[in-house]
Image (cartoon, rainbow, N blue to C red; front, top):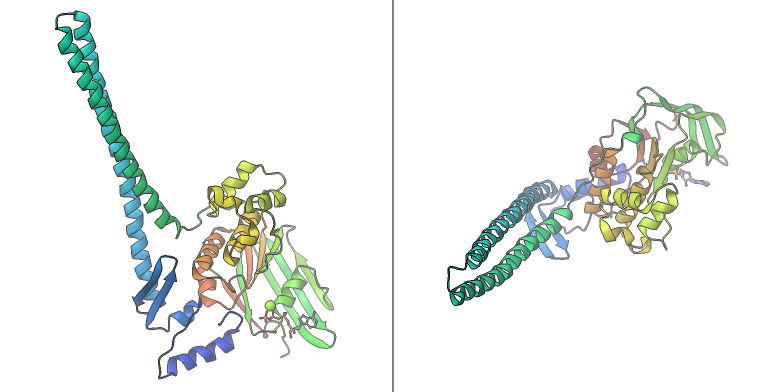
Length: 369
Ligand SMILES: Nc1ncnc2c1ncn2[C@@H]1O[C@H](COP(=O)(O)OP(=O)(O)OP(=O)(O)O)[C@@H](O)[C@H]1O
Ligand SMILES: [Mg+2]
């Protein structure tokens, strides 16, 4: 419900909620708003779960559970290797016994009927062992599988995106005395800005204040009325929530290959797995993805290309995304090392992606106002 609201509108809504005397039920992905609640109810495919306390308390609880699940996975892996070792030992012991039996047979100093009985027994034991071993292995592997499923749902993206690095001090965006109006509606007046090196900047401001217009000017989709805009790199990517760059009738992998013609299928699978589209999930059709998955897929195709952007511009990327999707986008952006300009009304998101500087419209767009 707060998706498109600017800070002022959000502020009034938060205040009204805090002072309201009655009970309130809110369905939202807005973490600031959720932090004002006394109880969090999570609706998942596994059921509905209730947590006492606000969103931060819920988050702490989830982190503890996650660590427990990770520990469970590590234990399950250890148990499997222990079982494998003990199976190996038992096979070796059995083979030793069989070798002994064959030696006795060769020595010919035992009655044949006894030797046959021994061999029969040994074959039976071997069969029984094999069945028991298979059951033990299957059990241990099942445990790993289910532990993995639980851990992977909350996986984060960890990948060094060193090719997005920008030399410190390099002038990335230089805007000098910019003026822009739509017809006689003035939007930007006498605005200057320098962005150097791998700065991470947020543009925030009321709806209609001109943030998207400024981005369009930086992208040269619009022409300034006056002033100069210089961009220090050819490698610029602009991603909005519509993720138009992805072709919806192709799979994620096909899109990757389409956007990265130099790459082969293996590169594609590898890159997409790094962005949590593992194995066959890379073969999902884009039209079937959620909004969050689409954005993550596009980030994978863009950030893991041979020439990834050094200037990345995001226009309200988290609108309409659920919290898990926002978290995976946050973890992708934390790995990005280039210059970042983000338009967003979501304070928690901006904090999480380590924004260093915030420009507030309209004051930054209009020196005379
Ligand atoms: N092509 C256009 N022609 C005329 N006016 C426009 C055009 N595009 C935008 N505007 C107007 O210019 C102003 C700034 O629009 P812009 O989209 O840059 O705002 P914004 O800060 O991105 O807003 P929001 O937070 O709602 O996305 C608005 O009043 C808008 O109605
Ligand atoms: Mg906008």
